Amino acid sequence: MIHSTPDEHEIPFNVVPDRILVNGPGYCFPSDNIEVEVGPSLRDKFIFEYNQPASNGEFILILMPYHHHVADFILSVINEVDWSVPVKIKFHPITERKLYEPGIPKKFSTTDEPIPDLLPKVLIAVGRASGVQVQVAACGIPVIDIENPNEFSLDAMPQTGKGIIWDRATSAEEVTRIAKQFKKLLQSNPTRFREEGLRIKSLYFSEPTEELIHRAFRLD
Image 1 (cartoon, helix red, strand yellow):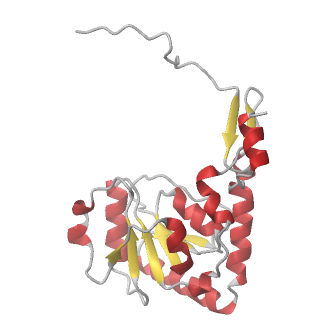
Image 2 (cartoon, one colour; image 1 turned 180 degrees about the vertical axis):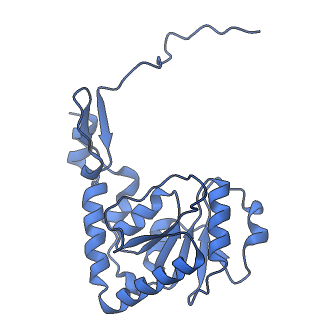
Image 3 (spheres, helix red, strand yellow; image 1 turned 30 degrees about the vertical axis):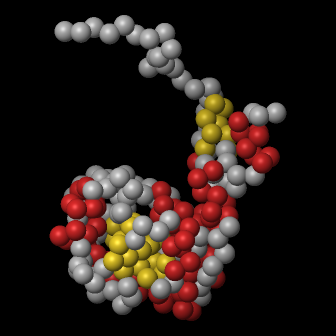
């Protein structure tokens, strides 16, 4: 057996940070021992530049998660839905696509376009366990979160906006029902999605302004 000597630069397991940066005020939590501050949403900068009405969407965007069992369940559900518009699937960057190719109908297409380029053409986004879903909702685009009631998976969606700009489904029937509700609202009152998206954005994202970056990382 080989015994390793702990490196003097290794971080011990009992170290507790004295400061935590969160993505937005909606993630803040009270703490007597740790300073919690809102930091800049650096990887989400594009949502502050997005300004398109969701009603102009052309296709359904399926956001495939990293975990194989979750992705399999999503595919099994969306394959049973009679979609009235084209469907595009965007895989997680490190997913082995060949594992899923046999289960993807020919009527669906896949895409490697970056999310910021896809958003102006997305009518509804569908996924699970993906922070991108929150980004999409923050841009005023409705989201369907597919959950397998028989398995545990990460829940990425906040309670904010549930039943308005996003909702949860566990079957193809529920996906169909929610999609119809979203399409009806997109036609009758599309500003409702925009308003709810702005609320989500204000709670869970902080624009990476120079001032906030300097304050968050104490660059002065």
